[in-house]
Image (cartoon, rainbow, N blue to C red):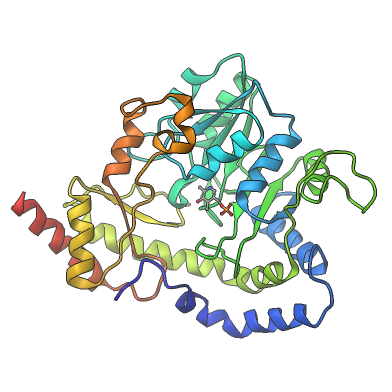
Length: 366
Ligand SMILES: *Cc1c(COP(=O)(O)O)cnc(C)c1O
C-alpha cells in the first residue's frame, strides 16, 4: 500500500525533536499564546522575509482576520480562484463580503491575470491569489492589476510553504498572506495551526487583537474579535520541524521531476517553475477515474482528487446561482486532475513507471 501521504513516516526523522518540544511545553505551564508562539512567529516571519507573523488557529481564520482588519465586509467583492479549496471562499463569506470567482489558466492552474482584470468592478476591494499545489500564482501581474485598480492583494499560501516567486518567498508577495499548518501541509503541526504574514505594522497590530477576542490584554475589547489563537504545543512542534522544510521541499521537487520525466509524453504533467514546492503533484487525464481505480486496485497506490467539486457547485454556494457550465475551466479541472504520492520517501521510479504503464494501458482500452 502506497498512501498519498504517510504522516507518521514523514515526521519520523524529526521525531526526537518533536517529542522534546512536546515535553518542553507540557512542563512549562504556558499553553496558549506564550513564548513558543512568539518564537515561532519570529522564525516564520524571518523565513518568509516579512516583518510580522501572527499565529492563528488555522488558515481559514487567518484569511478571515486579514479581510476584517482591512475593513472588507458586506457590499464588497473579493476576487478568488474558481478552482480552489472551499476555505478560500468561506473566508470571504465569513467576513460578510462576496466572493467573485475567476477562472485559472489551464496550464498553471492558478488565477489568470487577464480574467482577473475583467472581473474588477467598483465594489472590488481585494484579490486572493491561491498558490495552488505549491506553485506561486503570477503575483507580478496580479500586483500590477491591484495597483492599477487600488485593490489589496492577499495570498492564500496554505499550500506554498517555502515556495518562491521572482526571488521572494510566498508569504511576502502581497499585502498579507495566510498559512495553514494542518498536518498534511508542507510544514504541518500535530493538529490545526495557521498564521498571517505581512509587512503592514497596522495589520499585525489589529490581527493580534482580532485573534484574541478583540483585545490584547483581558479587559480592553475594542473590536468584536474571535478566538483563533495558536497554542504552544503546535508552535513548538512547528519550530522543531521548520529546519527540515527546505530539505523536504527539495525532495518533493526531485520526485516531481522524476514523475514528469516518465509521464510527460502520456498525460498533462504539471508546469514546473523554480520556486514550485509541489504540495501536490497533479496530473490531468480524461481517464482520471479509471486511472485512480486501477492504481489503487492493482497496485495499492493511493491517488486523490484536489478537488472534485469546485466551490460554485457545492451546496454552500448554491445561493450564488452559478450553475454547471458557469465556470468551465474549474469544472474541467475537477473532472481531470489527479494527485499522485509525492510527499514521502516511499516514492520510487518504479511508482512513476507503474503510473505510466497504467495510463498507456487505459488509452489502448479507450
Ligand atoms: C488547507 C487549505 C486551507 C485551509 O487551511 P486550514 O488551516 O485547514 O483552515 C485554505 N486554503 C487552501 C488552498 C488550503 O489548501
